Image 1 (cartoon, rainbow, N blue to C red):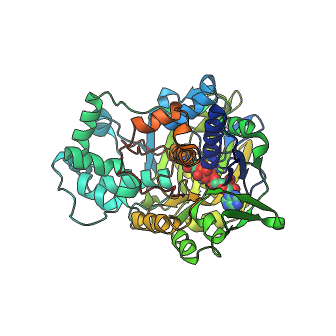
Image 2: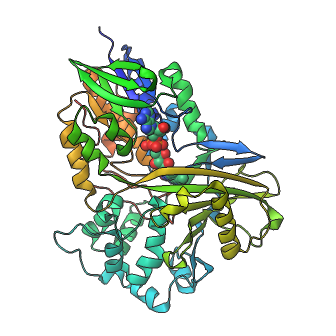
Amino acid sequence: MTTPRVVVIGGGITGLSLAFTLQESARRLGAPLALTVVDAAPRVGGHAWTTRANGFLIEAGPNGFLNREPHTLALVEALELGARLVEARPEAKRRFIVRDGRLCQVPDGPATLLTTPALSWRGKLRLMGEPFAAGPPAGVEETIHAFATRRIGAEAAEMLVDAAVSGISAGDSRRLSVGAQFPLMTDMERDHGSLVRAMFARRRQGTGPSKLLSFDQGMGTLVGALADRLGNAVQPDSPVLAIERTGDTWRVTMSGSRTLEADHVVVAASARAAAPMVGVLDGRLAAALDRFEYAGLTVVALGYRATDLPRALDGYGYLVTRPEGLASLGVVWESSLFPGRAPEGAALLRVMMGGSRRPEVVKASDEQKVTLAQAELARVMGIEAMPRHVSVFTWPGAIAQYTVGHFQRRADVMDRLGRHPGLWMCGTSYDGVSFNHAVKSGRLTAHRLADRLWGDRRPVDGATEVESASDRWEVETSGPNGAPGRPARSDPPSPRAAAGA
Ligand SMILES: Cc1cc2nc3c(=O)[nH]c(=O)nc-3n(C[C@H](O)[C@H](O)[C@H](O)COP(=O)(O)OP(=O)(O)OC[C@H]3O[C@@H](n4cnc5c(N)ncnc54)[C@H](O)[C@@H]3O)c2cc1C
């Protein structure tokens, strides 16, 4: 039996989930597999990175995931990490927006809708008229903003939805495609004629609100467990420069003229990172990959003495509405969410800055970012004290932007990939931007690759059962800023981000 050689490019959560799932399939089958995961960075995990400093446990990227995605939960189980899961405190359900310079609670039911200053009475009445809103325009790929304006009115679209979109994807609701970014919404409208009716129907079916989860030692727990199980297969400090084909074999060239030969190559890095790798192989594929857009994000984490904060951190945090003109998209009250994020008597806040709203902020110096973050915390929350701790993380291409035309751009990539048997692409550039989507994309690609390698011999594991049980694609809505959870939905079977052979 020949040993199939598989190279996974990108050791973020997509690539690690993929590699581990494939390795598990081989192990259960007793099949040989030569697996390598290469990553440009000195550590794996990509955006999923937990750091510790001065007693604070700080997430540089995602701080949690919703419990609605079976693929992530199956991965947690396979790694025996169930006992390490922690659930966000119930107060975290309370979320705020900044409107007219003050914090207003986001309505989460009829009682808070009546009392919140987040919307005017006119805005509230229009929102309550959602069941009677006009249906979708025929033949148009609507933006999120247009969809929300049509269904819940201009004010709620601006104050609640646009702010939430900034929180989830660091993007602009006027440019993002509702079908690509929030397919659940278009599904709910199609199936029930109204989002409100759809929510009641979901409740009747027992689909309650999702829970936000993390691990006792943060999201790095999952990354660390995956890296441990993959052992020497993981090669950090290995930036890939080119992917080429010589005869039946793929050749992956890294910096320092190092090369790897493979039967299958999976690019689990972003489309933007993939484009230069395939420039020589297929200029049209490179051009198609280059058409994907990204928004950058800066995270400024600030640790304070709890007594230095003028208000209780009694919720998840807040999102900033566009008219406020701030550089912050939102602030997550980290130490209120999960235990162990700050030492006794201290509090940890993460200010998320930049996005497509204020791209110049991501390019500023760390010093400028900290000054800006502190000034905006003073303005919104009245925090004048100096922080005990500050960390800055900058992610220039943080989140893929599914702007109008996303489905066509994705189809163009798939079309070109069909010409290159053995070359696969997956990850959050294509089928959903959240942590859960990344895990799902990695695992589904591993299943397809296992089918290709071992066909009927592939053992049925928990993951396979998950896949067949849910052929609909759930949309994760726990965004980088912890935007208000939005009801989720599914979309049509993907034109397979992972094309492969
Ligand atoms: C600040 C921030 C906060 C977020 N918060 C949340 C949240 O709370 N909840 C949530 O669900 N999602 C959140 N997200 C999104 C979530 O982090 C992503 O969905 C997920 O981590 C993406 O994982 P990935 O593996 O697809 O990509 P990445 O994490 O980007 O990993 C890609 C990997 O590819 C590597 N790579 C790139 N180029 C090359 C090359 N040439 N050669 C080799 N390797 C290469 C990179 O080094 C990287 O390790 C957040 C994102 C950010 C940036």
